[in-house]
Length: 370
Image 1 (cartoon, rainbow, N blue to C red):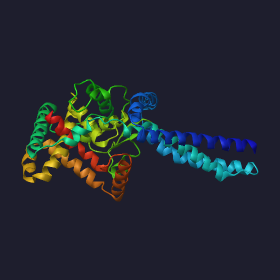
Image 2 (image 1 turned 135 degrees about the horizontal axis):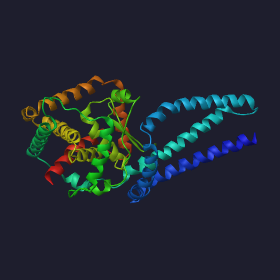
Image 3 (image 1 turned 90 degrees about the vertical axis):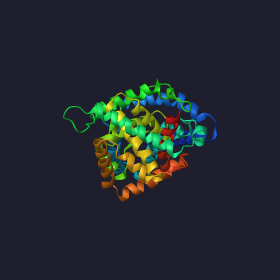
Image 4 (image 1 turned 180 degrees about the horizontal axis):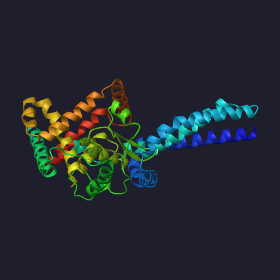
């Protein structure tokens, strides 16, 4: 009985320590000027480099595997606690099980805060004053859309040869390797006046394709996710090829500590368009057309239709297939996920919620004008 009490007190103590540490990190990142930036550039890289290398040794997503195994392990623990209570008089199985859950939850909360939560309050990748002051005309937007079309025309000419009439994206291993190379190369390039590419330097583990949960992610309208518990960039393996290079780089930017969704989109886009790989270059400029084209359509639908006709037929086919894919997976779950994600982003300082993703258009136009 004394051993049980001692074990219970130890678990409670562990829970309190992890919860207190998480609370301190959360409060300091929000209330202490400069703390989040210091943490994200000194402490977090050590965690990312060590835990990221450990989970990176697995070819599969450790986060996905834990999601599958954790419910099973919890049930096994509950059964074990009940069986133990039958052998030991005076034991309290429910209390012990609750302590186990509390300890697990406290560790996960701490890992979230340490590997993700604080980074929401670091200095942004882009000068926010320059972003807030940015103004563009319809002519600027049209010019950028025309640039996207010309880049896709060039890509089509170099990517397709002979009898080939359809672009084939590389397999997941090749995309993962190129995503890392593209992010590292971007960190070495000259930055525009409103951002600093050198902050992207350092170690990157390979992005992982989800195996069991891709269908769930498709139904939820999710293309990828960063796991702070395993420091992994996870990609929906079920979606069409055009989004996979861009999403891989987007999630790697989160892993590097940039949590703002608009900035992650921008970093992912920059990595793609600066890549020598035709698949990444193509992915980046198609994404550029989607975002900038949608903005142009909202202003001048006729001009949008006129420009869209200039896109290569193969690109239009990909756009149609991508739209049909996501439309076929529109469910109640995707609507709920949008609301949850919106609330989550707002709670972490992204006041525009899921609209933050759309900041990519402004950031691309800033890049275009620089």
